Length: 174
Image (cartoon, rainbow, N blue to C red; front, side):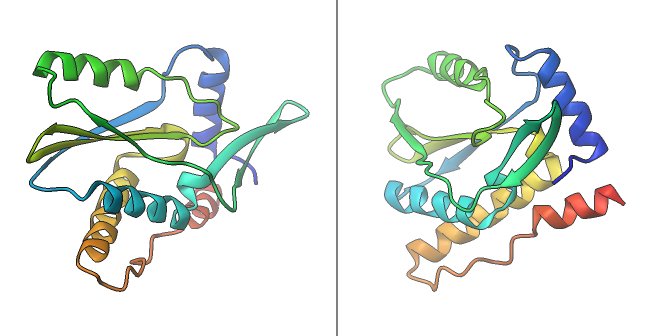
């Protein structure tokens, strides 16, 4: 599938500066209370499975960029207990992690659940701007929250109709 005009601009900027994480969109969410780590990780897997945007990668054919949605991805959210870190060390860790360079032909996200204390967690989510913007990041957060709630309450774990990224691409192209 062709890139939209906006995506092409981002792709070109990244192509011209491959060693610089120009378009990383880093989100850091503070979560107060108990978290079931395995359920949170499971919810994130379900989010990725059901979001075509999070499974979108980019490739070139004859120096022209294209995008495709992977049917499946083998991605596991990381978990890190940093409860013995002070606040400045956690910020340093988050800053370092946000500087990764995504390979555009691979999954374009990085996610970690950090345990800050017994009742405080930080969810780090870094997504390349080619597949998200501020609005879609908010939508993804809401869906992640709903999926997690379904899992921990023993609900039916239904997916709450995540909007299709492909629909947005089609809209943008017209």
